[in-house]
Image 1: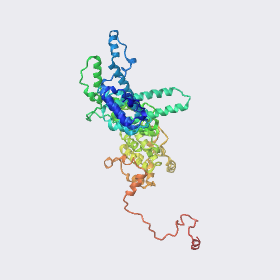
Image 2: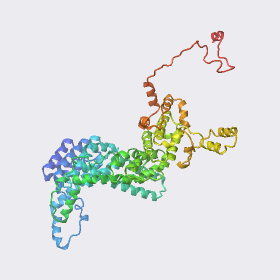
Image 3: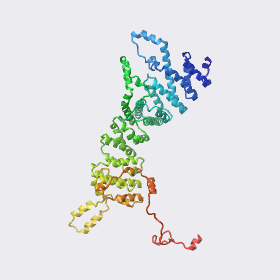
Image 4: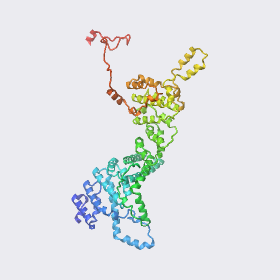
Length: 590
C-alpha cells in the first residue's frame, strides 16, 4: 500500500483507484487515501477516474454526515469565547483527538464539495458526468443537515450554475426532470434566486453611480450583468408554478424534514431547531410558496432587463406569473411603466394590465388615450397582434363607454383600413361592426350628411335655393375627423362618417369586398344580429387568405369566351392613334 501511495497521480490505474477507495471504506488506518482521492476530483482528470473517486468519497462521507461539525465550528477563529468556568472543559475538548479528527473530516468534506462544484460547471465535463456530480451534491443537500434541507449547499450549487460559462439549459434539464417536482427544492430555489437578484441589483446601482473611464471595462460589466439576468430568468421560467389552493397534492419532499417535526424541544436551542423544522414541513412550505414566488419575481422585475428578456416576460407574465402572485397589484408599477413606453412593448403589456384592471381593481388614468395611440398600421403585422386585437375588442365591450370615445375608435380603425394589409382590413371591419352593434349612439356614422351644412341651410332660409345648394356642395368632401388628435374628445369623430368602410367594397382583395358587403344589415335590430368573433380574424395574414381562397368552392368558373377571335392584345379604342397589328410580311421577316 505504501508503494501505491508514493506513486504520482498520473501513474495510477483505475484498478488501483478502486483499491484505494475500498481500503478507505474498510478501516481508518487508510484515512490517508482521502486526500489522494480528492486530488482526482478535477475537470482535468479522466471522467472514469472522477466518477470512481466520487463514488468512493460519497460512500465514505454519507454515514459520517450526521457526525460532522458545522463548517463554522470547525474553525477556531469562529468559536465563541468560553466562560472562565468552562476553561478546563474547553481545553479538554480541543485536545480530544476525536474532535480534531472530525474537524479535519469536515474541512475535507468542504473541499470535496468545492471540487464537485468546479467539475459541475467546467466546460470540459461531459453531460453524463455533470448529471452524476449534481446528483451527489443533491444527496448532500438532503442528508447533511440532519434530515433537513441544507440550503447553504444548494445555494452554492445555483450560484455556480448561474455564474458558469456553460449553457444553463444543460443544468435546468436535469433539475427540471429530477428535482423541481419536490416542493422544498422549488421553495429554496425561489429563496436563492431572490438573494441573487438583490446582489445584482446592488451591483447595478453601484455601476450606475460609478463613472468608469475605461469604456471596455464598463461594457464588460454590463454584458456580465445581462448574462446573469438572462440565466436567472431561465431558471425562474423553468420552475413549475405554485399550485392553487383548490388543487390537491401530496407535496413530496426531497429532504426528510417532516420526520423531524415530532421531536420535542429541549431548551432554547432545541426549540429554535424545532421551529426551523416546522418551517420546512410540507404544509408550511405549500402556504409560504406563493409568498416566495412573489418575492422572487417582483425583485427580478426591478432589474434592468435586456430588451429580449423584457419582451419574453411581457409575453407570458399574464399566464405564468399573475395567477400565482400573492398580490397581483404589486405588478402595477412595472406594467404601467411598460405600457407608457409605447410601441410593441405597450402592446405586449396590455394583456397583463387588462387583467389587473378587470380582476384586481387597478385604476389606470388615460388608459383609453394610450390604447388609442397604439392604433398604428404596424400593429396589424406585429407578432402579438392576435392577442392585442382581442384585448382591444374586450376593452371596447362596455356599454358605459361615452359615445365620443366609441366614435373615435371606430373612425380611427376605419381610417387605418385604407393602409393596412387585407387581413387587417378584415379584422377592422369586424371590430367596427361590434362597436356599432354595442353602441347604438354612434350608428349615425354609417351615413351622415354634413351637419354644419344642414344648420346653415336652415338658418339662411331667406336666401334662394341656388346659393344654399352651392354652399352645401362646397363642403361635401370635408371630413371633420382629425386623425392626428390625441384627445378623444377633440377628434371630431361624432361629426364624421365611416366613408372608408364604403371604399372597402371596391377593395382589390375579393375576401375584403365580400366581407364588407355581407355586413349590410340593420344593426339597430339586435335580435337579428350577433357579434363577430375577433379571434376568427385576428391571426389573419396573406397566407391564411390565400389558403381560404383555394379551399373556397366557386359556383361559377370564369371561362375565356369570345364572340370573335381576337387579332390583337389590345383594342384600338383603348389606345387611340396606336396600331398593334403586325402585317404578315413583317411577321415573316421576324
